[in-house]
Length: 127
Image (cartoon, rainbow, N blue to C red):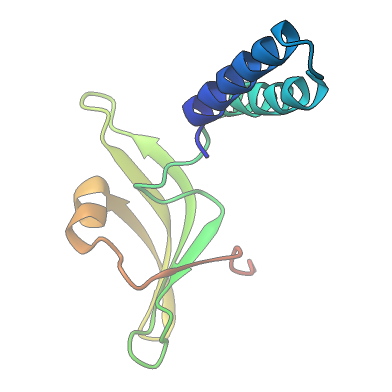
């Protein structure tokens, strides 16, 4: 459920609580449900936006789920932006054909390949 959906659900539970109150019925369960959904809506609205689902995340290693098919991994160390146009560039290390090499991937690279079939893995060992 998204933040706005939680907010709407909280409003619905508050309306139910108001109806129950006017009818002389118990309001505690409706109020409790409204509070839970309001809290979740607030958490969603104030959560840090550290995820960039449309691009690489620093500290993650991406690899093909079938290494026998494609011997490819990319460990993203940082993401920077172009000073003029703001395009993101992921800087890190690519493992290809048995060796690691430094590499930069831009948004066009990511969009072009889409990296379908890759898996997000824990950070690759350093050293």
